[in-house]
Length: 145
Image 1 (cartoon, one colour):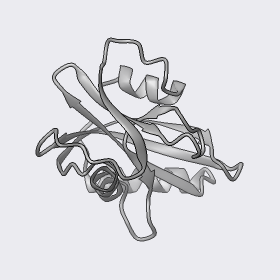
Image 2 (cartoon, one colour):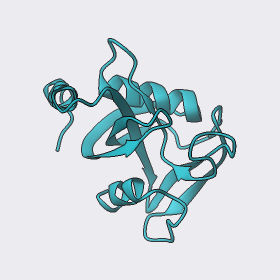
Image 3 (cartoon, helix red, strand yellow):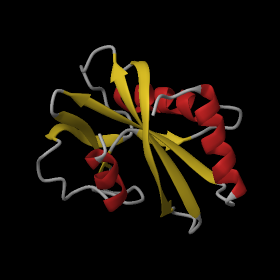
Image 4 (tube, helix red, strand yellow):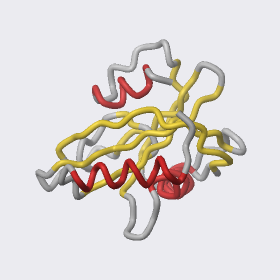
């Protein structure tokens, strides 16, 4: 599904109507048959798990803009296009409330160098490989790429 401003607005409104107060945008960055994974710092919430670049949507920011910003902040990579909406999933956050994560397939201007600011490791993992270190939500997103 192509990403339009109408789609992003619709997703945000749907989450709000369902009582979701915390919204996260995430970017699936691929290079051939590999996907960029980042590992959460051991002392963070869900520490040690592998994830995709993601973060909270700031007030006044669109979900798509947040996916671009979070990718740049967490990896140093610049998103050149947000290609399509993949899917969403909900999870319990560190405050015990529900967060909805919206996931987008993106293209980056260059796949490196990856410069981490919030994670302790990164890897380019095979999409068809063992993704046992990611959550079920992320695994389902990656299966839809």
